[in-house]
Image (tube, rainbow, N blue to C red; front, side, top):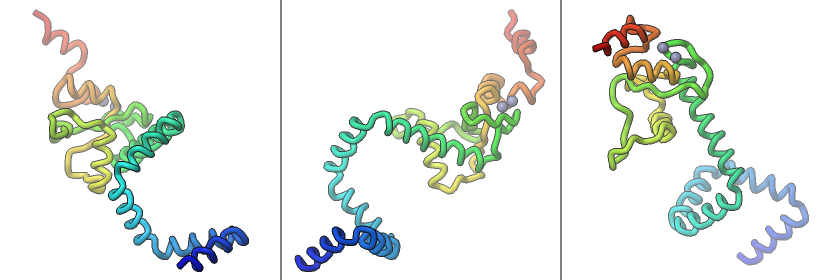
Length: 171
Ligand SMILES: [Zn+2]
Ligand SMILES: [Zn+2]
């Protein structure tokens, strides 16, 4: 065992490229096994990992927040591409204007009754394979707000407009 380890160490020092290539090939051949082992290791040492990742996040605050931003944008882009590519009402395509519209049910809540974040919901949707039968659509902020105010559809598509709402509110 120790001989084997010594051989590995020598190979790593003398021929680092060959060693790395061999390691990589072995990893690719046993990927499932490696991933399962590292998952188990993380689960068995959760506290250590939590301490380590907290330290890492604190030392790399900017890098981490950029990574979070990038991963959220990527997730949002996937969602928009899966559900039509633009606002269902007005065709707006600017990613930062787009939202999740729930036409069949209220937005999901966590066990304590609070609404989960849009990104948590997107992760759930992605995990269940972007289902298309749940009344989920892409709407821009404007069309989403307008739909909520009018109740059934956006002002772009309904007879309601500022004038008729004002008339309805008039004493
Ligand atoms: Zn719109
Ligand atoms: Zn609209």
